[in-house]
Image 1 (cartoon, one colour):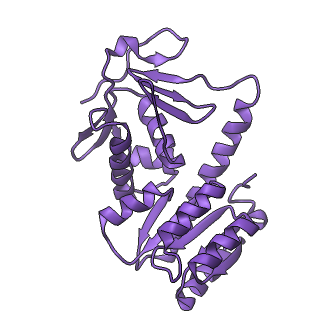
Image 2: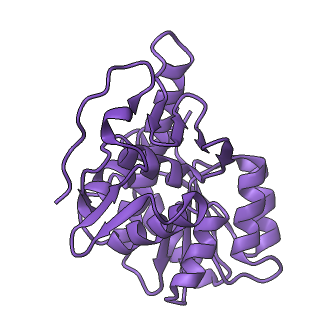
Length: 259
């Protein structure tokens, strides 16, 4: 089980970065938080160390010798889902979407501040702890009921999503974002609120991350379900009337009003 970021000694961070100076600087800064840090300098070593060490979070460079960061992320996630923060020297949204598509949870462009790196790592750890606690609750008698909104069904206990009869496979972050949007149908949620509720960030420095994840959701679920409110945020717009949408097994109640 992932510990709280405040309980530092049990947290293990794996840094996969081929430039020794950058890897050492990142490791030194993260170690300053009291976390245990291991380094891998190429993709093959990163995959092997992720498998043997089972880290709580991985900080992963995209441009690596041997295996690139995208393939490393894909292999790591295939064996055991783990929060991944990807680092890249290219500020390209296509690259960002590809990274999110192989299971990365967050994305930072070089150069970056170590303070922000620490903040984002802490946020990933808090989210992982929250997901672990939710899974423990769901194994008991107080499992969260599914959310059924229009033709979208979200099973929070099994973390599965269907649109109509087709299952839609989402990354952990995409799933959390969808739950937040579906929980307030037709209500405009600001990017800042989504950052706070999904990523557990306290500032607006990652609004582009929200935009990229919304684009990824649209590609998988359909572009018609999430409405952009320019300059504000996003709203989930089910295809059926709001009176037919609510948690399964519960009476429907009016959703929020988008403005």
